[in-house]
Amino acid sequence: MVWADLLVDRDAVSEALDVLGNLDIIELQRPADNAQSFPVVLEPDEEIINRLAELDRLLQAMAAHVPAPDPAGSKRYQYGRSTECVLPQLEESLRTWFDAAHPLAERLRLLATQLEELELLASCLATIPDTGIEIGHLARSANAIAYPAFVAYGDAKEMHAFELTEGQVLIRTYPMDHGQRQGPLVAVGVCAAAQLPKLESQLHSGNWRFVRIPGGIEGSSTKALGQCRDRIDAEHRRHDDMVKELDELNQRFQIGALRWVLRRHIWVNQVLADARRGQRFVWLSGWVPATRLNELTTSLLERRIPFLLHSESPAGHGSPPVQLQNPGWIRRFETFVRGFGVPDANEIDPSPVLAITTPLMFGYMFGDVGHGLVLIVAGQWLQRRSPVLGLLIPAGLSSIFFGILFGSVFCSEHILPALWITPMQEPLTILALPVIFGVIFILLSLVFDALQESWRGRAQEWWAMRFPNMVIYVGLIGGLLDRRAIFVAGLGLLWTIIVGTIRAARMSGFVAVLYEPLKACVETLETLLQLFINTISFTRLGAFALAHAGLGMAVVILGSMPETSLFKWTVLIAGNVLVIALEGLVVSIQTTRLVMFEFFRRFLIGRGRPFRPLRGPVVT
Image (cartoon, rainbow, N blue to C red):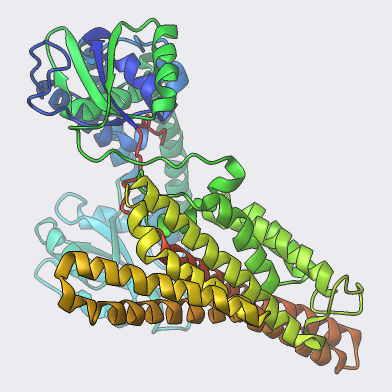
């Protein structure tokens, strides 16, 4: 990473941020107050973002009636100009539209409420028998102004909500289900206008729904129901006409385009909140990958954006971020690295190694052709929702590979002959091979540690104190195959004693020489004990491979017990699903554990800060 200072003409800063956001090329950071990259006086400006926020509040108030942001349409709306140039016209257009659209939206809201009440009234009238009550007579005798009529709908158990007060008259109740007096009821009545709010509050507290009978609804319940439905149809047509009018208003003012322009300039000014701005220039600064500086310059020149670019080393600007650069097929394995911590500039990125070793470990424990195919299909489908689940694809390929070697297809060992060995027939071989793999894996971690110490300027320390541990480890492992290799381990121990004695004599004098070699030997013994425990830990690869084969054998045996084909296939399918779900989860955990604790902990510290480049606004 290098530190880049970019001075951009204020009229072109919006378009410049588009370029930066589309490239994912810079992590913006406010320059230090004493930074002198450009001899200009720049001061922050907060007025614009407040004006933009006010326009956003207008749109939020109309959120239910406005189209989605339209980036394509916004291209015609002064797209590349600065916020200062766009904002006056944006304010005029949105406020003019709001003055015309807001009353229409309010009428739509009221009309929606009226439709809801009419729908409730219609459902209640449909319950009342045709000879049950004369709606028109009720309205005339009640004097609709002084004694408005109403209907309500609720549970019979909540009838206590009707607390009769002076001037309130409850005419009649009707069960929704005839003969079920404890079920839902429809109540029809009149009430003194002064008491109506109190009655309505009582009904709502009893979970009853309440609606007044509007004027013009007359006759028997059947006739009143027809009138109510006619009114509902008329109100729906009126509602559709108002929606159409509002849509035409939105289209005439190009509200979708204006929403995107507004959102984009809010994003621009949020990004610029920590930048230095003046009357003519904007000073952007931050971290850029050194290999992409030419790409940044070329992209700005192609858009004809006036700018000055100054780049320098990271010194004096804090800790630079870290961006891992791997091909696409390796990038998904960065998940393991990021879970432990991002490597800093003096650390190795082990993702390429993991791209080979983790599928091998998973497939060895989960070797089955059929199960591997299931994992590939699941990975293809699930990675669209969560990219990390794309790891199931290489895991499935490895499972297919080892399934061919083990001769296992959906737990059966009779469909495909084993190309290598059958796990349950050669358990010692299955357990031994992972130990050899573990030795190579641990030695690789020690080599990575040596490289990193060299990069940090501590190579002499590594050769003095850690190299003999590696020699002793190799000698003892080799001694299991050939006793003469023990001599190599002895040389490593002698190295430890000699180096410990020399260091003690230089640092602490003759007295320390008596115990420092012993201390070095004890520390070496502790390190070697950890290395051997970590090596033995890789036997879990073989153990879970045997467990997977054992579960598969059990599924096949259980599937052969039922007499009918239907039950046999049911048992086999259910057993395979259980094995895939249970073993797949366990094997994934074990693979992650071996990577994290037996590999990473020997060289990876993970103190790097991940690179978070600027990205453009998202369409929602």
